[in-house]
Image 1: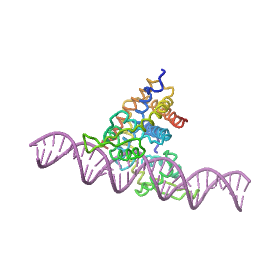
Image 2: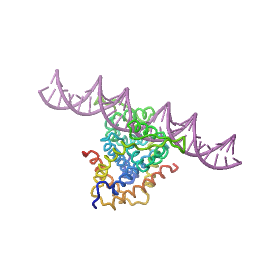
Image 3: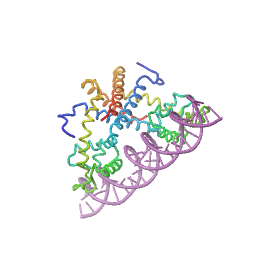
Image 4: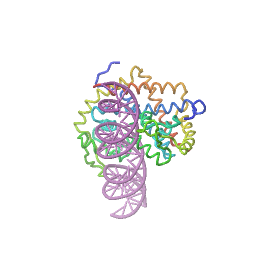
Length: 154
Length: 154
DNA sequence: AGGCGATTGTTGAGATGTCACCATTGAGAA
DNA sequence: TTCTCAATGGTGACATCTCAACAATCGCCT
């Protein structure tokens, strides 16, 4: 359907709605993790670390969490103060730390996961698994498109 | 992470992916608006104001933007310094400001909108309009579920 | 008219995020 | 080896967000 360039069209409104819903999702996760006095970012960091039994560097974390290195510094600082994470020397690279989970963090995560799994069931509701997969896939495509569109020259 | 093949199930992984994608979408919009030296929140604020020709109070803005009142203070402060927004006296309520768009802001928005509409087309790509609407609707349902799930008792 | 709870905007503390810049270290080319 | 360039983590400046507390004002109720 052809539209004048001055006419927003439905895709414009849908995009705004999409961004707003994404924000609400993130807010919901913030409320959820507040029960354990964790921010979503803190949980994500701990969760990522469970994939690295030997720990990983802060730069690795920044790539996994898609955030700037300098932000990881503060996150690890606060988690370290709380005893959920430890900075160990990296024998292969003296520039880097090896960030590892503490037993306390593993205990905390073990407590959280069941609630998280249950919440995931509630979130998806009656949506069939195949439909959910399709939704996530479509959203991923849209996200890639958005990344490209954002950098397109005006 | 524990073995995904045992208990968590696909819905857990899909939820994490959903949150990550939502974050990427937001990041893409940040890159997009950086061209005009605006943050997504600043654009959203200006965009909301276009729906209120006579302006509105900061509390109205906080409700529209789903953010805390105290955050609106800073946003309006900086937009006011840039001359994109003005605080006028609210004759009906002496506690409140009436925040209005300046002509400069209207000019800036007029410049941005065509690019935004074009970006929206790129973002949705070849996805049919009906499919896009369905996706947004499903996502909205999921967001509501997430809000409920986040507050469910542990 | 007076009282009282709710609302408005601001402030300060603090977490989260970006970016630019820095010293240190690593790794490979000359 | 030495030189150069990239990568690592830290810092400071700043924007964005939340929350608690506050003074001023509004609106309603008696």
